[in-house]
Length: 248
Image (cartoon, rainbow, N blue to C red; front, side, top):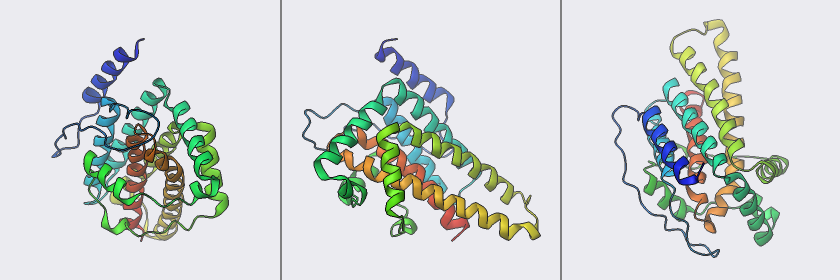
């Protein structure tokens, strides 16, 4: 199948099969404005842009109180993104781009890179993400070994396994949020049940962020990586929203 045909068909499936959350409106597509030194900036991919905007809407809605519907909708978007990016060979691009950045800056510099705050703010605004103020200064407290493991996973597997992992976690989050809000956890079980859920939630949020740190660094040099970076961070942020509202 030619890529152009596959892209058109995929856009149709996104628009037809994954409706927006009620009360939200679409955003106009905008071009990327991120500089790099590897030639001309790649044109925006309409499928990826659409999915990332959907993720932004879900994250924004979840800030008002996360529900199982938010987690399920986000999991569906991330799975759709994983399928599409595998079709487009993005994992190979991601591995090569991260290797390039590691060679440029050194492994430890990548592991402990500080986010480019201005670039991140510009990307978030472009795709419609509203800042979540409570999550602004939450430290990761990750060990060096955890950072190394996340970078190794990215270098070996590319970006789409991170989407799949987030989707699996979000399915669990959806079920537990539904059970909690339906009162299906007994009083005697509640403390231990919820503590276990919160511990797992924090661990998965931390893993997603550690995965995002080196990949988002590549967006400074490769414009195509920026929307995928936001998809990762958007998924992680919904986990953090659930954690801070229901656990913290």
